Length: 536
Image (cartoon, rainbow, N blue to C red; front, side, top):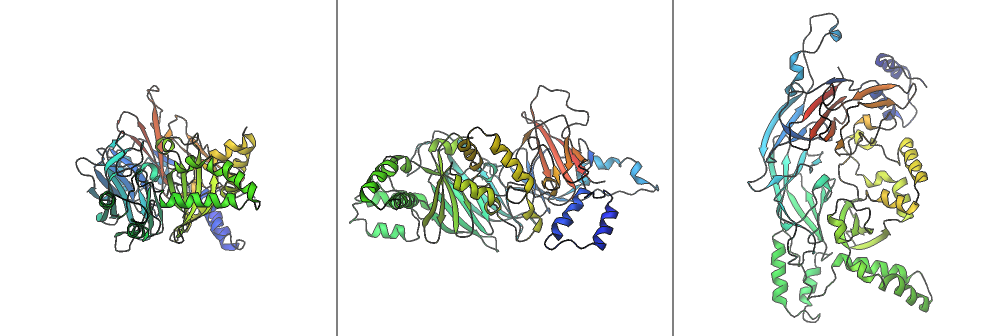
């Protein structure tokens, strides 16, 4: 049905009509078809910062200094000016509209990194209930670090990784968590997942999932560590039974335990001489063995199946390492396993991978899938929202489009599957996004596929840089009359003069206001070109 673009008519319609049961929020969101960031101020005068993102509640804009040493936090405001004429819309905006300070107020600037550390500009997690922000600083990577103390060969090492918990209201550092001689994948929050007040940090180098709790007081409290041991008393049991289990060199084991205390967790890194399989790996092998054992009741066939499916691939299972982790709920983790090469490479599509669902309370593996499993893909297709953490504080956070809640996104997915030459390769490609990166999608209503369609090669809700284009990005209404509603154009108004230099763009949309920033930058650390898009 045709909807008037006149916002007054829509407000009047809201007064005289009652939406169908359960659709009031969807009807209210249609106002975003009228309220759009259609006006652009090009090349705003702004400080030379690295602009990260708006917080999910829209209260703060997170930025970093160019030297990766300082955190700068702004409060979004709105351009205000006076006009004495009758029709102010026909007049140009005042000169101050070209200034960044007209749209944002700086709250504070905090130095986070020490002299030899740098802020990880791609890492930031926001705890909306307490307005806490989690940031990370680290020293440089050592790519050829020796594998000592139980470390995985081939995984880089970082001398020091520090997680900083800040109260964003005033910039006070509440707590810090330090990892020494370890490796956590900080790019795009890949190695860290936040679920309510629980935090999962994956140590790739020592194959440990550290579970922490963020208290209301602002403390980071260790809850458990999953890796070499699964239960809190596993290490005590092994140490007390060491003589009967043939562990001869207990002094060496004690030394390894002391090394791991540096990262705040008393957990032994068992050396090859001890020949122990890690706790999480033992759970995985047991689950695979029992699954194959229960496939057949005939003893002869059981033995044949075990030889073919388990013992033949036994070393492959032993060599698997934890790549990535996410919470499914407060008790279950989705863990991705793969080879060492895949853990440190930028693309994992060509590496074999497996997914396991782990119950932290019972320490059991409850499901296991290969990365081309149709069963897991169907779960992901129909229940995609269950892989994303829902917000208890902001309702609009639960309307991020996915192929399980949006018919247009689902049709796009099925169209891609029909065009795929290999069903198995398509499933692998889709499941490569699991586990989901924490807080990686923008909740802006202008990315709602039920309201707008746009070229997802140029812009999307995903927190990623895009190759810049001189053509404006069009946002077209999904509903009749399906007209162009507004355009977003990064870079200078007249286009780029030098087309030889490769440029990338990023887009920061406010979570609920008709307001956005487009940032175009080159790869040579030149100042960024920042445009402000808003509703005038």
